[in-house]
Amino acid sequence: MSAEAIPLRLALVGNPNCGKTALFNQLTGSRQKVANYAGVTVERKEGRLRTPAGRSFALLDLPGAYSLHAASLDEAITRDFCRGFLPGEAAPDLLVCVVDATNLRLHLRFALEVRQLGKPMIVAVNMADVARRRGITIDLQALARELGVPVVETVAVQRHGARALLEQIDATFNGHLHPPTVTLDHHADLHQETRRLLELSVSMPRRTARVDDALDRWLLHPVLGLLALVVVMFLIFQAVFAWATPVMDWIEGITGSLGEAVAASLPAGPLNSLLVDGIIAGLGGVIVFLPQILILFAFILALEESGYLPRAAFLLDRTMASAGLSGRSFIPLLSSFACAVPGIMATRSIQDPRDRLATILVAPLMTCSARLPVYTLLIAAFIPQKQVWGVFNQQGLVLFGLYVAGIVSALLVSWVMKKWRRDKTEHPLLMELPSYRVPHPRDLLIGLWERAAIFLKRVGGIILALTILLWVLSSFPAPPAGAVGPAIDYSFAGRIGHAMTTVFAPLGFNWQICIALIPGMAAREVAVSSLATVYALSAANDDLAAQALQPLISHGWSLATALSLLVWFIYAPMCISTLATIKRETNSWRTMAWSTFYLFALAYLASLVTYQVAVALGAG
Image (cartoon, rainbow, N blue to C red):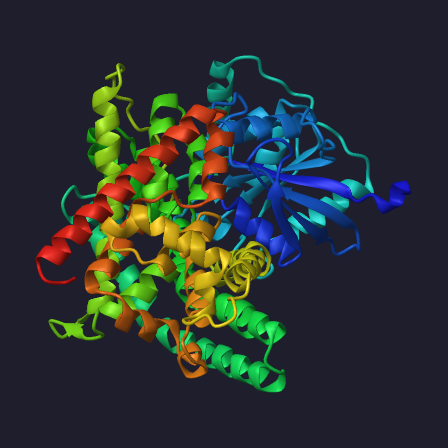
């Protein structure tokens, strides 16, 4: 490859909450990809940038860091990349240090650390529009003169808010890249230099915005703040059911019509069964839940972009500390509502090893989006669709209760771990509370697109493979001549399912459920597609096979069985990917094995109690 074909590399670096990722989205749009750095689980975001002069660059969004004296894996990755020491990564040609114009007291100190690396750099003063509204004035020329590097304003949420940065990048590469020469040796020098720069170049009438102060009086109140957080979470789960229903009905209609068309166009036989009963029934049963998953993701992204999540962590710090966690555990646990894998990876921001391990072990108890298809199926089949008190959706209330059960269980487990450990010391929470801001639609849409792509790749990859494998196991060997009953009873899957009922019968699980539990270990969503495949193949006639899964289980299962299975999915180990992530993040097979054991034990005991009590109350 010629030197001209290798794009120059730019890197965005800055503190968390400086608007760096929004600026990355502004500069790259949809021309970006997400992966992991080699050998670690830290997320790597790279995009393509083209300047007005026609130059093409590879732009990297580095993990947020408060200091280059790394206290976490994220900060270590950022430090090593900037220095050019990260294995498998070429050194950046230019660093763009993004600072928050409304919080220069904190962010300028980090910019001084970056300057000490002696690399060519530009300082992008982001959120300049918010600073002006607060009456903050910044003398960019004076700041550039004192820093010895170019300084430009950016407004990442405006369409042309990065124009000055693009022009400066072109100007920088039109000449020669000149690294800064000023260095400071001690932490005290950094603080003193930051104060000097602020005095020379920044006029700040107020340290915080009046709007922020007014909102914080309510949202950080020890009582009203907690009530507000409960209301927010409650509305999220109401919306997951109420808003997604029309789109889900539309997807179900398309899937059903496609299955009927394929069945009518092919002669009866293995290929017809594979396509209709295996692939279409299996994948269609998972894709239908995409609207609910995206609604959940949209709320989480909006809360993160608005600056509310760090405040929720601060608000819950005392409660979580009493259970053996810290306020820093809140964001990783909230991320686990989407998926436990990034939630466990997010624990890298927890500096205390004890708190980090406790958070990793309870993160699988958070109700991830992969459980949502199972919850939705069972709730829709067994919980009547009606209004409670004329306002609330009854199915949404049950879903909210399942999420609360996961949260309470996580707190109880961490409390038990706290009682067992020897170190009883507490670690105070110190974190930045960013300014409130309105989430930008572009950033939300890009985030939703990335997550939808990840979900659909899972559907097209592991879920498709497991669905086909389950169809094979459920279809072969063929029943012997003169056999009565569904053919699946004589298949490998049927034999496995019937054997497992010896263990799971006390929980109320039939052999179809037992079969679905096995592929569900690879990905929770597969449990629904597995049930759809098994019931389609075990149907006594074609008319029954054509029915949707929901009415089949509502007539074939007792309420006690449905409740037992719901409780099982609260506690059972989430998926192989989660267990593998626990192993990678802790570098311990023992920790992974303990996590698997205690989650299975909790799931079995809780489901056993639920089923037996429900039967005793007449729900069996």
